[in-house]
Length: 498
Ligand SMILES: *[C@@H]1O[C@H](CO)[C@@H](O)[C@H](O)[C@H]1NC(C)=O
Ligand SMILES: *[C@@H]1O[C@H](CO)[C@@H](O)[C@H](O)[C@H]1NC(C)=O
Ligand SMILES: *[C@@H]1O[C@H](CO)[C@@H](O)[C@H](O)[C@H]1NC(C)=O
Ligand SMILES: [Zn+2]
Image (cartoon, rainbow, N blue to C red):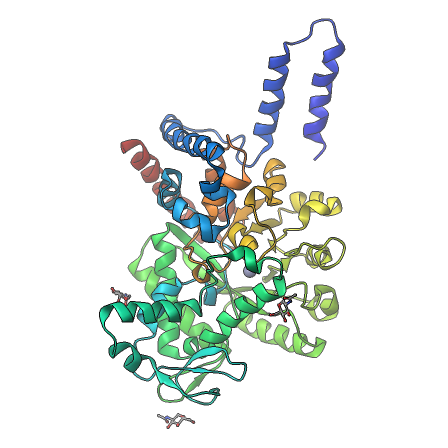
């Protein structure tokens, strides 16, 4: 860490010597040194990549210049809900959408598919109802067991409406499964409220997704949305809760894993460039020690049955109100040697409390850290993270929507970028806030988190990092490298062409 600073010292010291380099030369040298030290700083670009890079950078510099003049319409400085409309006008964003982004490494299956698609495509079966549950929260359901109000058949409601009212009805339904609000600043002071709204979404869809036909359609769509955003591989957090089907048969956790694996294999058969999807078994971060011990037993059974599909374990939920990882040291201390932890840790604004989860994650030998938002506050962890190549999964828009940071130019990952930490960019639950795949988060990383002059090297390094820190067999690694290489060349050619 100190290295970059030390190498500047002789340079600054030379100010006193007889032959001073010109002041401007010194400035250049300092800036060059910083540039080389950032994520992607030392990547070499081919001639074609240089051409594409200058097209990209012309667009980026123009957007920044415009934003400097008119900051109120500069998406990277705005909340995503207010800036999204401007993102859609961005040339940089269009280029990023076309770019192969490698692997998707931090997301939760039930939050990944676009809410609009869910309303349009998963709420059309004739036996689906809405009602209010015991907390007066709207839920989708196929039976009345959880209803504490009148039930309404979604099909009947929808079919009775004309085209315009139907769209209005669907937008109203969508509001229950999307965080979007016109004035996110009103929510910001109360993170408890934001988390409540966030968790309510998963309650609203809980019964919907537990119906096997819906579950299958949902996950097919999840894979399609990844492909549409030029992602070729994913590792997703999932709880694999039991499903039921039209004959009232229930599917236990292992059977759910079977279903999901089958869906992935069918998808791969149709999309030869798609390398795969694997599962990190993820459970809530509030439980007794006994409960946690049981989960680890379940995880071991799953992992034994499918070591290359159920690859690891994680705990999820609001860290500030959940139990600390430290509570479960005994339960978590023995994991099969082929499995990994991928802990959420440091997703907090606290300093010296919840953020110690990062230390426990590292002591438990986590392979990656979800968020690590509080990492810049903990110098004792930095060298370990670099030495052991523990990737930090940065989710910019998620951190903003869930109220950790307003202006993403103040996101702590800027420090990690400047210091070339092993980071990857991901999107957590893009479907519940109107993002899709990785492009929106890559855009914010490129425009808000990284330096103004960060270029194609930065974006390429993010994609390469995602592959580097993925959990792949050597065969899979060969394939992903080959596919990525091919898609990258196509991407560069397409940028140069128009
Ligand atoms: C989803 O619904 C839209 C609108 O009804 C339709 O155009 C589209 O084909 C559907 N997609 C799938 C995969 O069913
Ligand atoms: C914050 O939100 C929680 C959850 O909805 C609520 O119980 C609490 O009263 C809110 N606090 C304030 C000060 O509004
Ligand atoms: C499924 O279970 C529900 C409630 O237990 C029952 O009303 C329904 O008739 C059952 N359906 C079938 C096909 O067995
Ligand atoms: Zn997450």
